Length: 156
Image (cartoon, rainbow, N blue to C red; front, side, top):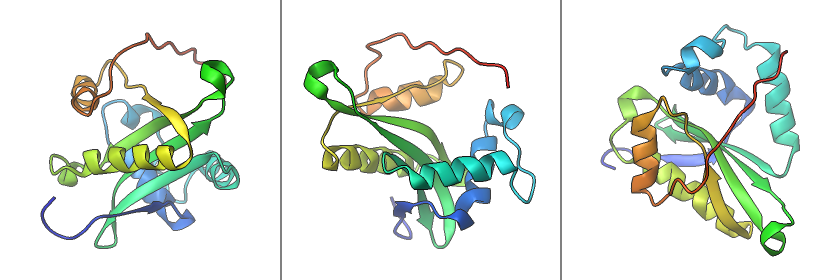
């Protein structure tokens, strides 16, 4: 990536509004996120829970004091595969003006490195079928569609 050096770090409370804006700035996010200021209490509660949980890592990539992207990694213990830990990558977003410059790849590679540091034997992620560009991006990074993912939305 040309230009200023990006810094990937754990998210802080001051980053929350920027993260929410990233989550809302896409086809699916604009209908399910709330960008009101101050942030919706649900975001504040979720952020506090993430900060307390040592198996959660909410990260941002910052370029010259601007939050340019975010992702969340959950470190999941399991009994299958001889008790192997896995990392689940979620909510990957890059601000529109920073896309197509290698920042997404940098963030995913960083997340994979963090998974390795924590002893994970597998990194997994899902991408909505309505995001074919994202699916292609992950495939280029070596991820394979080895499983069918399913979700069930619960009433609030």
